[in-house]
Length: 322
Image (cartoon, rainbow, N blue to C red; front, side, top):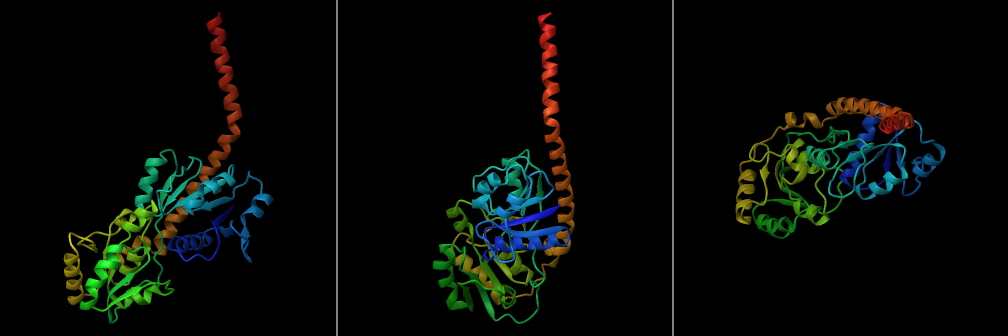
């Protein structure tokens, strides 16, 4: 059996792409797993059209898909093959047929597909928080850290200007390779993605940055939309952002900055570390293999089932005629 992880291309600066690459790395420690591109050929990477042309449909290979806008096209292209869908964001309005198992990266996504794919095999496998996201217990010269990407207009246009005169605020407005260092230099991390996802017509599928910030010891003020509610627990491990008034947000954030205490969220992070995910992934792969074996056996027996069913119907009709 081969696991083929499908990507539009290999170099994409997005959290979902990085998370999918991590899933593939874990799978590679358990079985034969390979990256495959489908939008264009890349050096030393398998290409989907070549695999389809060279591989018969009746085999044990599994194709892992995840890129929301391309799911319908990929399901059509991979019809009659073993396909697994890894669900990050929801809301793209496509349907997943019951022969395709769903692996949801959050309880939010799992609940969504439990509602809209009630006949599907559904699992929960959270994204990995990599080992570099650790609290280094060092001095934190940045009071407040904000990423421009996905941030609401309220955060960018109102809250940041209100906070700047009172603290050392740092705004990230480009892609950063080493976020762990910035998180470890910061006391408070602000995140508000609800407006972004409403405008996109989709949901926050996991919300890596707040959890990565917490892993590094930051105090997080965040929206709690969608999958963020999987792990954010306001007033216990985080604070709800955008409450009542701008002045109230400023007051609460500055209170944390001025009374800073080091945080340790490692207990919360255990399910998101690679050791826990490897165990879950192994169990999930085992059940998925059993499911595809059942499908293969069931498909082979359908002609016989239909024949026997027709014979029973004919007998009933003959009895009625008598």
